[in-house]
Length: 89
Image 1 (spheres, helix red, strand yellow):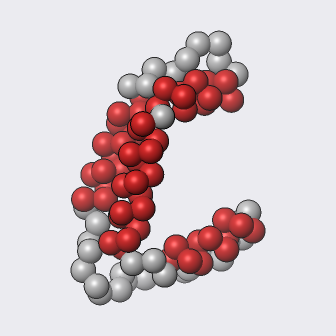
Image 2 (spheres, rainbow, N blue to C red):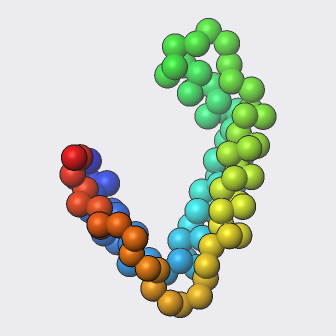
């Protein structure tokens, strides 16, 4: 958890345009290995069969849509809630 908390500090200062590029690369890498990932997730869930790789199509479409929906303007976002502390409540 500490590593994730530390990584988030850098992520929050990463410009949105750069975040979009990073996430796009992640989606491409994920989709390229969807058969391998489907098999691994199936094993981790304790299932005997395998998740069909088609399950990952909606995942990649949602992420791509969210990336396209990003507001890439330079204005800072409005804060509507307290900042994350990195600690469970």
